[in-house]
Amino acid sequence: MLFKSTNSDTSPVSFKEAVLRCLPDGGLYVPASLLDLRQFFVYMNSGATYPELVSAIAPLLLQGEMNPYSASRVAESAFNFEPELVPLDDHYSLLTLYNGPTGVFKDFGVAFLAAVLEELLKHSAGAMVISAGRGDTGVSIASAFARRRGITNVILYPPGPIRGLKPADFVPNGGNVIPIQVRGTFDDCQNLVKAVINDRPFAERYGVTCANAINIGRLLPQALYYLYAFIKVKKQIQGDLIFSVPSGNFGNLIAGLYAWKFGMPVNGFIAAMNGNEPFGSWLRGGRFVPRPAVSTKSPALDISSPANFERLAAFYQESPVVMRNMVYPAAVDDRATLAAMEKVWRQYQVIIDPHAAVAFAAAEQLSENFDPSSHVVVLATGHPAKESQTVLEATGQHIKMPHGLALLHEPADPIAIIKPDLTALEGAIASCL
Ligand SMILES: *Cc1c(COP(=O)(O)O)cnc(C)c1O
Image (tube, rainbow, N blue to C red; front, side, top):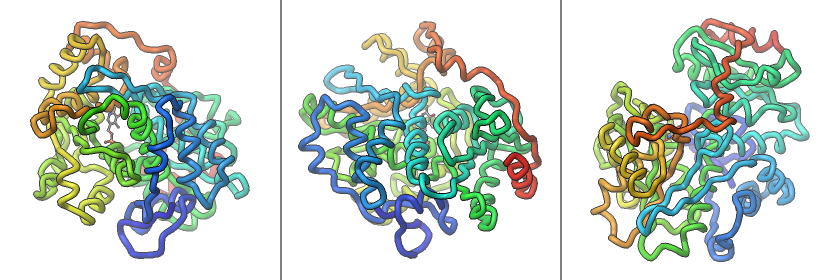
């Protein structure tokens, strides 16, 4: 597959180049050509495991850049966890995406990116992956990149403890992770990531790229779990198939749209937002007016200006009318979020987290737009144990933290503490290597 920038008409680049450059000329990479996976939907059997599915599709994604054998090795080394399709009834299924090391769907994209980079860089000088990490995102990235040959992993985070990193993985202890605390805001960390990538002399000396969601190498593999859900539900569905996606930065939704563009038969996507619905009116054909985010019970969706705006806009520029028939925006407040958690527990004895609840409530809210025989796959993006307080409030149930996720509570010390300043950052990195 080839990729182009949303910001210019320069010639398309390979997957490897798109992954390593991350941010071309102020834009974002999007596919310049699409895969046609319609064949795949015919022959892939519904009993396939996730690694089997990834091994079948990764060689097509990476065609011309990696032989099929290496691509399968990437699939195997990326995933020791799987999504699960949980049928609720004729109308609803859950796609649980929280079985990875940090209990959120982001583990899927990060794990693939780490495995594919290691393979692509086998015969080159090595690379440095630099990311802004808040909450568990930094941990997700650190755990996927730990011990990957030839890759140094710098994580920038704002003041406050960073939890769940393993000091044994840090550079001074023989590992490859460099956690750096930045005396500033999370936005300062994100701006520093962009500044380092755009500092060409430094970026080229160390082979710098990033593992934030802006990297297409993290976004694209998320399309694979939509395909997985499709092969699991296709036998059970009589009518239309809809995915409901709790959306903050809109990466997950865009990955679903790629799956659709690759030929997955699907009839619509619900862009499920909470009280923060920065894209609501834009998706309906109005203007996009960023508003400061407010705190809700589904914190991962509290975003004022989604990072994937250019990518979403690229879809609408191509075919606005088709897109308005494909993406259904919905806004769900905290009360409806808690009510959805309670209902799913009462009706199906299944506990969902507030983010999945936003998606479930959005599907119910929009049900009149869909054929009565349609089936909605609700993306369960976060482990309910990570929001145990809200689970208790909504359902009265105490939920235990799985052992792996409990480790996310251990605080770790940074290797350096710096001002939000490019020279300070580059100095801190250089002094570790
Ligand atoms: C990040 C996150 C989301 C939002 O996903 P986007 O791709 O940013 O839209 C939803 N749910 C959970 C649990 C998350 O961590």
